[in-house]
Image (cartoon, rainbow, N blue to C red; front, side, top):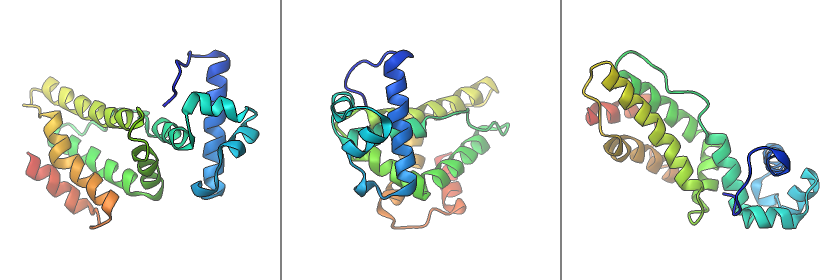
Length: 181
């Protein structure tokens, strides 16, 4: 995550946007191991020192780009019931995070555990689960403990994605949700 306070709008936001766009474009055409800060700086029209000052190093920049891509653009689907809401969310989460793009984003975020990227990524998941819990409560359902849903449903999925020790089938994901409830 950025090391300095980045103002909304203005030159600072334009630089961040251009650097992010450049990184995303480069990742489409080349392996991340071939990407360098000077390459990003040249293609985005900034100096390498600007990138180092804002992000510290390449891994922090990649993590920041990954977090920006993981930011939710909509609330989870409303299926009309708490358990099916959570199931729909978990099926989508597992599919997105186990994709090639999702795995690369996880690797970028987890590669910078000192930075704020992992915390932001985690917050996105918590926010979605909190939305599902609040929605259930508004319908008169009992709700659920968001922390426990992370422990019993999300954590096993992330573990299996990171270590590749099992296929994340829809049936497996549904079984996690079912056991949770």
